[in-house]
Image 1 (cartoon, protein in one colour):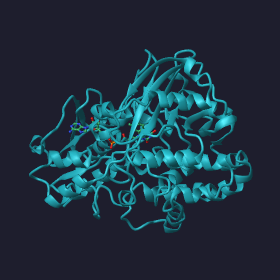
Image 2 (image 1 turned 135 degrees about the horizontal axis):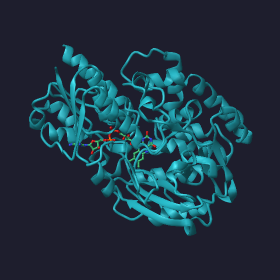
Image 3 (image 1 turned 90 degrees about the vertical axis):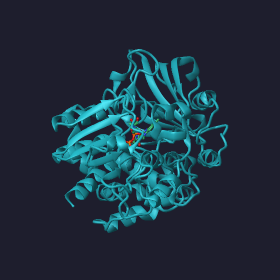
Image 4 (image 1 turned 180 degrees about the vertical axis):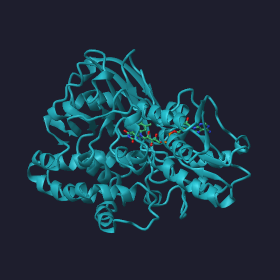
Length: 471
Ligand SMILES: Cc1cc2nc3c(=O)[nH]c(=O)nc-3n(C[C@H](O)[C@H](O)[C@H](O)COP(=O)(O)OP(=O)(O)OC[C@H]3O[C@@H](n4cnc5c(N)ncnc54)[C@H](O)[C@@H]3O)c2cc1C
């Protein structure tokens, strides 16, 4: 029986492990941390019994993928739950915009911009299954749905500020800017619409669900499946040298490209090693988790029903904040992404004390304390928030990277969403998973289709590894 080792137990490492084990390989996963799961861990960050997602909280792209159809995680303990409002964007004076599951209802709430919103997101939502099938795999393939992909591509290649011109009201413009900012790119740069277009349409097709009990249930389900197929996970093992992996026929690396180049020094083709070291990382985040008594008193009511709230003010403010962090400057009013997972999954709360997870976009490796700026931003749209805080915990970019070396400098996407890296990641090649050493594959979010806890990079990397093994 061929033997495979997977370095790292993030969702991609585990998806690779399950895929290989299902093919009959003897699979071992080696994880540096004492707790498996990488970006899908759940912790009691603030008060006992309060469940916080340490990293990923919302899973719009995980529900219906080739991996999810082949390996049904819901049969192994994952239960999805949806908030009433998928995401909201409060503005001053109690105004704001909100996205519901229905395109029509969302458009109704956007007044004069409703028709433009429906014109953009209606067709994208209707064709989303075909579109997602195309972008949840390497871009270097012959598309099965060229028309749907073309429709998506027309908007995706545009700077987000250009798409914003389709809207006249500040509510709709800010709402679009908030979802576009998930790209961690200056919103005036080419292809800065790509991530927002995908996540915006996914909000209507699948919603932005949370996993009941916390995202750790996703890792737990994959580990249960892995055990069923005879594989195992060993925690507390940091792999630093390819020699430690010499006994295996296949080596899957759920690591950053730079870490892979370090690990493979001496055995990796120099051209690939150089490309891995040139791989660009994105800005960072500064995280705050809160325990909040009675929830957040948002002035804009729909935000009180929203799983995700983009706390950033106007489109102009989001544009300025994202431009600043790219230039290494900490904005006074950062873009803050806030998760209220407990609204969809009340089991995470303790009575009237609710867990809130949020982070501010900051320059890569930023060393300052952003707690006060985050609280001030939230307080701006929810007066009285500060008095309701009964517990909090902080993770700086340095701490985030210490907890998971894939998030160096606080880059939670494991790679910048530059135009080049949106198309070719981690390097320009037709075989993005090949790591330039025999039987060795990169399978992390640094490979297509990029960040997210959907496991698709791991799945495709494992498929590529199986092809290599057969040859
Ligand atoms: C704060 C935050 C919020 C996020 N929100 C969302 C969200 O809402 N939705 C979403 O889809 N995604 C979200 N993400 C992104 C998502 O978590 C990642 O894209 C995803 O986890 C990437 O999976 P991965 O398997 O590639 O790597 P990771 O999840 O980063 O896992 C890599 C694992 O490999 C281990 N490892 C690395 N090097 C070694 C080594 N040498 N030896 C042994 N083990 C090693 C690490 O310890 C880690 O456990 C968020 C991330 C963060 C941090």
